[in-house]
Length: 357
Image (cartoon, rainbow, N blue to C red):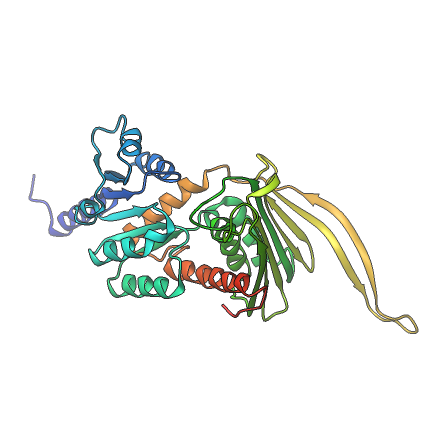
């Protein structure tokens, strides 16, 4: 048999190269194994394309707990070991006040970063991290998990394809009895979810943000907050968050010129309902003036992809590392959410005075 031709040999070599690229194992370090960290650890460790090399937490007891059955993973209470390791990327699930310094150090070490929401606790710090990630050509992804929820994606599609018509207003409620935080108020604990969804759906920043609330359980920490946003196209949004409420509520309503939609994340099955309700204009005719006719039509309950949003979020981060594409919730996205939250916090401190984010 004759020697293999040069084109055929190159084709086989190229195929092997593609195969090697596809199966490159991404090495991860995870900092923060407390409240939310174990969920991230569970998901990343179940994905074949990555290997969790190190887990870090300041609490040795918690570290031992999450490390059970994970002999192949190095456990440490020293975050610098993760920063200086051979990990390709680091997942940060620590308290919000630590995000700025820790993420800055990780980006400075040339690693990609996934950081839980909020990005930081100030716009200036967030801007610095976004600029650093850009200058180092690193992936910076913020954990706005609900942007990866199949129901939110479907809701977005209903707006984009014109099913709902022009969006008039959006309102959301994220309520529960507990879990009371000691290091952040209800605005910073809950509202990042709703603000990220609203900005995603409306694809614009509000012209003004107002917020009012009260501190009932402890001085200086708001237990309930009502926030309003006004946009240039006359659309509005309101967010109600509280950990002092008898109801567990995770609901967002979108009212459009054609139809209305409700996303209720507490429901296990019927998470989205599309209401064919509204008013139709009857044009003026002869001596009859223009009038409004009430329309009450069907309720449509679409089938929703049942995959776990956190799993989809983790997979998206790994895909962005491999392809170098911009995450849906990239640093700029996290910064926009941060601008709204900071404006709302200023408004809380000045009795509801509006601020431009």
